Length: 79
Image 1 (cartoon, rainbow, N blue to C red):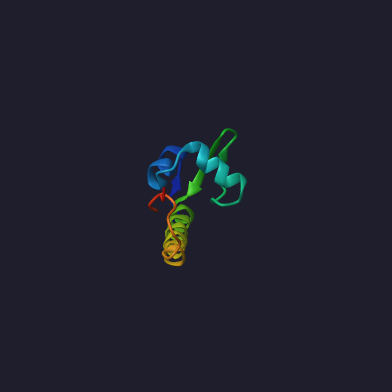
Image 2: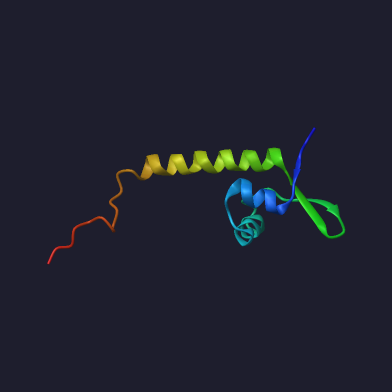
């Protein structure tokens, strides 16, 4: 059986704001909700979990490829 999450549960599970969730949805970077009623939507928990896992892996891959890139905030200033 599939569990359906309403928006407050999605926000809590992902840790991202409502506006960011809708922005990601508009850019097709977040699972699309399913219609539960005329004014009600929800997300399949399995799709949200898969998105979280993918985001984590993408961030880890980005860290691995960017570890040699100098950080402009940590560079000493020459005068």
